Amino acid sequence: MTDIAVSEMRLTAKPGVPVVRALERGIALMRAFSAAQPRRTLTELARAAELDKGTARRLLHTLQSAGVVDHDTRNGFYSLTVGLLEIASAVDTGRELREVAAPYLGDLADRIGATSFLWIPHEGMGLCVERVRAAIPNVDAPWFTVGTRTALNCGGGPRVLLAYMSPQDQEHALAQPMPRRTPLSLTDPESLRQEALRIREQGYEFAIDDFVLGLAGLGVPIFGHDGRFVGSLSISGLTAPLVSELDRNVVLLREAARAIGRKII
Image 1 (cartoon, one colour):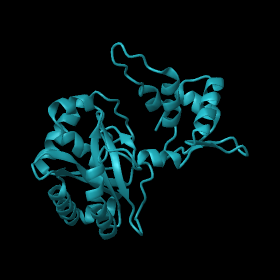
Image 2 (tube, rainbow, N blue to C red):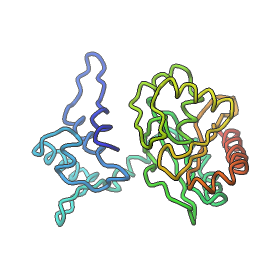
Image 3 (tube, one colour):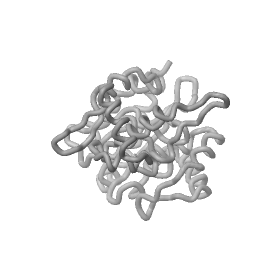
C-alpha cells in the first residue's frame, strides 16, 4: 500500500460517536506495511501515517507489546507479525467464497502456469481474498497478496468487478483515485464506463500491459446459484503465453467460475 493510499484511508465517525485517535493512528501505521514494503523504518512509517516520529515510536512500541508488530534492533526495521494472521483468521468477509474457490484456483494455477486470484468488491475497490501461485509460474505477481485492495481501472479481475457491480457501486468505484500504472492504464471515468459495457458484452476481460508492461490479466465473473454477482476469478502472467492460449484459458476460467458459483450457498 502506498503512502498516499494510507493517508486517504481515514476512519469515518458516526454522528455523535467520537473516534479514538490513538487507535486510528495505530491502524494507519499497520496499513503502512505492504507486500512490496513488509519492513519499514520509523521515519518511513511516521511519514506514511502522517505522524511525528515520537508519536509513531510510542504507538509502534504499544503494537509491539500487543504482539502484532516486531522491531529488529539490529537494523531498525519494523514489520508485522503472525499475530495479525491470527486476527485475520476471524475475518468473515469473503470466507465462504474463498473456501469454495481455493481448490479451483490451485487447479487453474497448475494447468495454466500462472498465478490465480479471487476478487470481491469492497468499498469501491477490489479486494484480493485468495491467491495461488503455480508450482512453476511463468511469472509471479507479488504486488497482489491476500488482503490487497486495488482500484478497478487496471487488471483482468478488478475490471470485471467494475463491469458487473451495480450502477451505484460502479459510480462509487469510479470516484476513487485511479492510478496510472503504465502508459496503457485507463483513468478517465467515462472511458472506464464504456469499457465496463464492453466487458459485460464480452463476458470476460483480457487486460494487457495496463498494470505492468509485459504482463496480462484474464478475468471472468462469478455468479451464485441464484444469479447474483459475487466476485471475479482471474489469472496473471506473461502476455505472450496468455495471448496464445486465450480461448482455452477463457474456457477454463469460465468452467471454474461456474463450478464455484454452484457451490455457494
